[in-house]
Image (cartoon, rainbow, N blue to C red):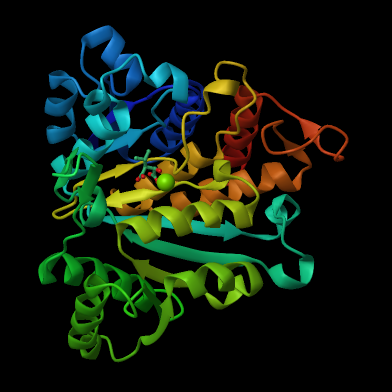
Length: 367
Ligand code: IPM
Ligand code: MG
């Protein structure tokens, strides 16, 4: 029997309630497969700062080092409450980026998946959505501006200034491009390369490296898009995209646009993959403090992140598919949650927990 240790970092805001539903799904998978999940909870995020004096406490660091996979809920507080925490300890800077660096999860896969059952959530017109949207944005996750050297100060004329460095070396670039090419090989064999080489030197090197490694993937067609043009194309003709690969900040921004295309960031799970099987899984959205604890958040992004863990960390491709299908079925049956749907929109509104229960019921009936 395969035994896996999974670190559970529930996080802040809606994190604990959506994590609870994700865990229910894992229990179903565990019960019907020759597999054992050892789930170990650990503090992480703003809550951890208040309870443990650190948003990424030592015990959590030690746990993520030995875990076979990590699942993480959203972290962070609202703008005002954040001010209670020193700037470098705020969970985005003090926990999330260090987690990414520690596990060196350089490849972030963010599916923008809008099958028929979800189409009504999208703000896009039916003719633009066509038969549905199904793409994966591949975002470089441990380099670029977010991790570059930073300096704030006052110059010789007394003016405040800031300097942040966007740095990549060729190895970082080729690592993420290989991930993009490999993913494209297993899908439609089209890779959209997103860059800004008309302005940024980092994109010039990026494209040079791409030209060098592309011959290793003769079956993949590369299509180049400037990032600003890609933002427009995502609205006007999203179905042309299958795998998109890009550097860290472009991926941060365009993947949120992906959430906009779907109608909510609540429909955006993700996988953060490193070398030698290191990986963690997280919703792409924030902790939504305004609706925390109210049982109105849809657990889709968390359960979808679990599905990605089943696929990428444990090779359970069929069960991952079953989890996705179970979630679509709940929507197709006419259920939703009030973070995604307005009253009067013809759906039956469920609580977070009820939605999780329906997913579990579908999963149990199928598989
Ligand atoms: C994301 C988030 C993070 C990021 C924040 C919370 C630091 O927006 O995962 O997309 O910018 O990467
Ligand atoms: Mg983001």
